[in-house]
Image (cartoon, rainbow, N blue to C red; front, side):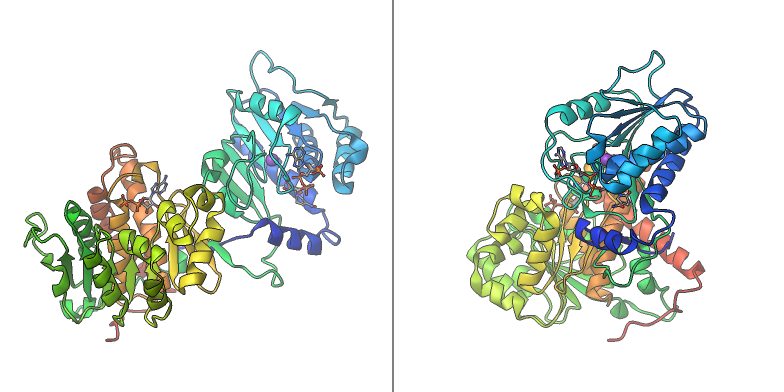
Length: 511
Ligand SMILES: NC(=O)C1=CN([C@@H]2O[C@H](COP(=O)(O)OP(=O)(O)OC[C@H]3O[C@@H](n4cnc5c(N)ncnc54)[C@H](OP(=O)(O)O)[C@@H]3O)[C@@H](O)[C@H]2O)[C@@H](O)CC1
Ligand SMILES: Nc1ncnc2c1ncn2[C@@H]1O[C@H](COP(=O)(O)OP(=O)(O)O)[C@@H](O)[C@H]1O
Ligand SMILES: [K+]
């Protein structure tokens, strides 16, 4: 479970790696890429003996396709290669791959053929990779539409053609893969925005390249390995005062449930005491289904808290703004969500107070909240989610999670992480409040802010994934249910961590 962390490189960094390694690599990177793709293909279609269709494009992605075709043919598979560009205009390595394929007895058709009577075993998109420079139109758009219509597994080499490898934005017609074999490293666009919908299952083929020291890793896929050092068993001799006092500030009229959900999530993740400060003057004084929560009026949260979350159901009235301003002045780790972010987006005094904080601040915007913070619209945030998350982190000197498919965690020093857990069943009201509660719960228990955020984001999705496997969701999953599942997943991690010899022994949080 605690497999090593996985790097993600934007196209610019992949190019740097290629530039450094291509001249000396033996066998060539393209040879390795085509071979690795052929091996993945064989595994994918062991039980499908029909012919394989490979559509090759005018650049090096097409070159990978020619190598793959040669390898598959040599392994005894029937291969049909479609290639419509001018061979003499292929880049050098792709031209060699093209020539080697022909020399090995391969043949090429210049238009996409109709499927044989027994269908294709596999269709392969080797049209465009990281060199995609503009939306796919014309002949290649027609090819992609025809490939997408095939009732066979669909494999993309490196990146589904048409998908922006950095942003996960489809540019024009885009190949919809059931499997993507990507080379050297993950790219951000495969993991966020529309990327997961177009990539299917991803296999990373590193081509025997070690993480090169000259290209700094700034992006990583979120894995428990990143925070396992904090998954420590509790000492037996402990008491609730050691496990933190979390505060939740929110729950205005009509939105009390949001604050209760966050409070419950913090409690179920092991926080010693959880206080919920409600803005609704007619709000309940007890949560009968969770009487462990200590409900207070918003202004009456205890002075001494180990971490505070502001936002779930907060509202944007002046009272809320005043409470937020006071919270920003507290020297404790702070989670800011929902209306806390909306208020900060339009108030420069709050922005200055946030940027001036010395204790950690964690911001948890969804794309619409991120757009308000950046003064743009949601489409512009989604068009480059990584950039948006990094920009918010930089401006506010805070840790940020930009939520949604492939949530992005960004740090003020320009590092970033992409989460792969979770599913569309989480797109339901209250789910973000639960995440806020999970983050503040770990902060209250003295987790360092970055680890707390990474763990909570990963845990939130993993809890929803576990429920979906059990038939609870994806459709109809409720936020409350993920709290219960998060507790289960988290305790599973703790047990796993105790078996892992790299984990340090029980430790008492320092207070
Ligand atoms: N370098 C290496 O050794 C290795 C590279 N590797 C592989 O190479 C891939 C990158 O190759 P690449 O840089 O040649 O770019 P690629 O994705 O093939 O596309 C460029 C071509 O497409 C064209 N074009 C672009 N957009 C278009 C559009 N919308 N519609 C129509 N045409 C369009 C563009 O034409 P132009 O823009 O110049 O008109 C150019 O001809 C990478 O993803 C990996 O698969 C691996 O083998 C590992 C080793
Ligand atoms: N398609 C999806 N895939 C993965 N996670 C998702 C998806 N849709 C929503 N989520 C997650 O669910 C949560 C929804 O949060 P948010 O939009 O703030 O909900 P609310 O404001 O209703 O509580 C976020 O953590 C988000 O990352
Ligand atoms: K491709």
